[in-house]
Image 1 (cartoon, rainbow, N blue to C red):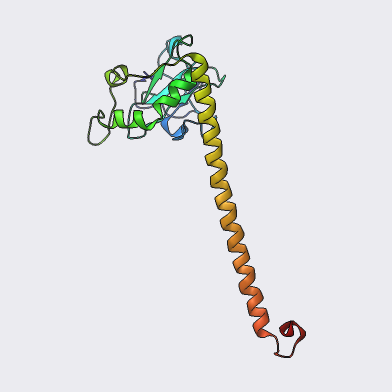
Image 2: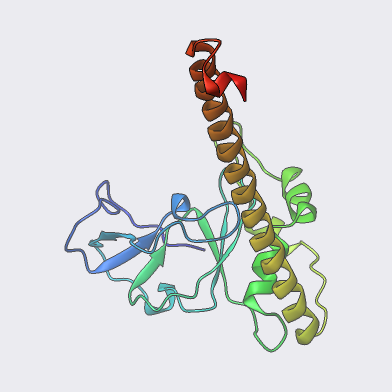
Length: 197
């Protein structure tokens, strides 16, 4: 579980704070960090060293309706995850962190959690919901291939979206040029060389 800090100002950003904090808004639906410039805070109580994030920890939001997960791979010392996360530390001899994060982002996982979220104003996933989830655990080399294929599929999707935008901009530009050219053609006298061609 992420860290719950007591006190009204416990998580108030402090530019010179000694602790970094990952918030739910720092993670995209694709399980990527939107930025690595986390807010800094100054806790008003001692923090257990085990609560600081380690490379390979998997962050999974326990509040809201998004089903995403991130493998934390930054080497930023003294970084905490807020209470809105479950922090998972898989046994890397059995489960690759990236594989676990990938599975938690699948449609299958989304359907599983959709039926278990509780609450009306803020929906919450309980620790028992996560613990009861059955996760297929293939051999590590297969997990690695699945993660690689998923990463390639994501890159392909991003490139495809960029290509679609570029095509749209190109067509828009060509249509604008055609409109301007047609206006110029229309304004020329009928016996001009441009209209004869």
